[in-house]
Amino acid sequence: MIISCLLWFLCLCLSTLTSMHELLSLFPPSQLVIRSHEGPDAREKRDGLDRMSEGYTIDHVVDSGKLITLFSAPDYPQFQATEERYNNKGAYVVLEPPNFDNAIFHGFTAVTPRPKVNAYYNFEEVIDSDEELDLESMVTS
Image (cartoon, rainbow, N blue to C red; front, top):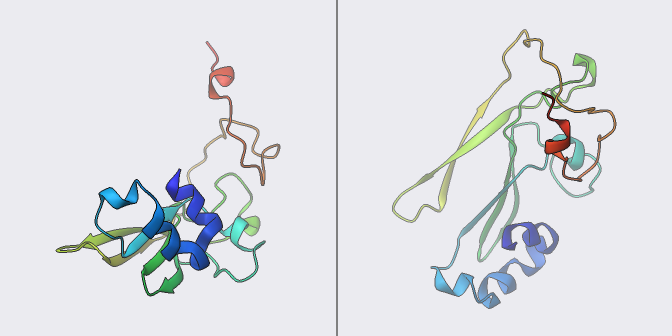
């Protein structure tokens, strides 16, 4: 709940949210908020946010810390023709001790040539949709 709310609060309310939220008061103050799964397609439609070409972005740096977005699917989307893909890198982050607030980013590219795979859903019907798929209805015997 907290992480998904940060998407909407972003920079302006990050300090207020982390200082006021009762659950967060149980933990040490956070210097780093990492969120995931906002791909290059979502980024290109939103003004003021960096592209996801390297697999991560540092979205905000404020006195209370940083807001980072990770995207680990390289060459997104998986099931479209090569010329329609974003050719982005995927990334993961390693947090270093002692405070685990220093993020070391590691980017990677997709395997090429891409292996042939079939989608488990009709991806053309859910493009740009944030709806959850009913996976149980898709199971065939």
